[in-house]
Amino acid sequence: MINEITIEGIVTREPWSYDKDVFFRVACYRDLDLPAKPDTSTPGRDEPDYVNIRYPGGAGTMFSVQKGQRVRINGFLQSREFKEGLVELLERAKKNNGHADLKLPEDSGLEKVNIERNTVEVVAARVISLDTQSKKKAHP
Image (cartoon, rainbow, N blue to C red; front, side, top):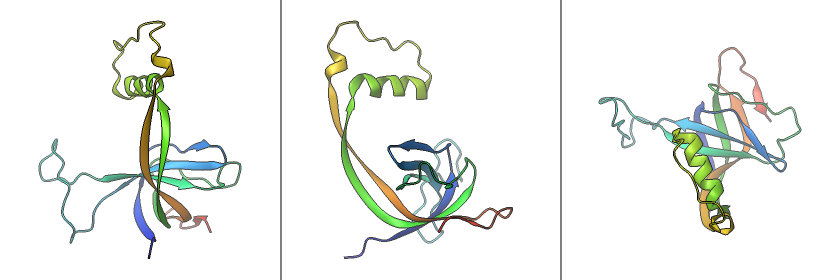
């Protein structure tokens, strides 16, 4: 079986690290011969697909990508399951959507509730910058 992927996209947020890995999110627009993903807010414009990238061992190294940078990633797809606390999930949703009115009752026991989730990500073997100012590899 083959599990290889090459995608190009634009880094949509600053990278973050977890353990020894670096993560970043890329917006990828589809090739013209693929079905479009219409942008519902702007007719006639296509919406990108957003993909999380995991660069193993990148934390604490010279590896660097920045928001707005165009990159090409070679790697493979990986799915993984994880547990996330309900309170953590709700707090992140509040932060991302700007809803300040979300309040959890004290001593409700909700801090003990975990939700099983899964994610699919690209594990990067190589990240190449496509920006014209720096046509160098972000990682060999």
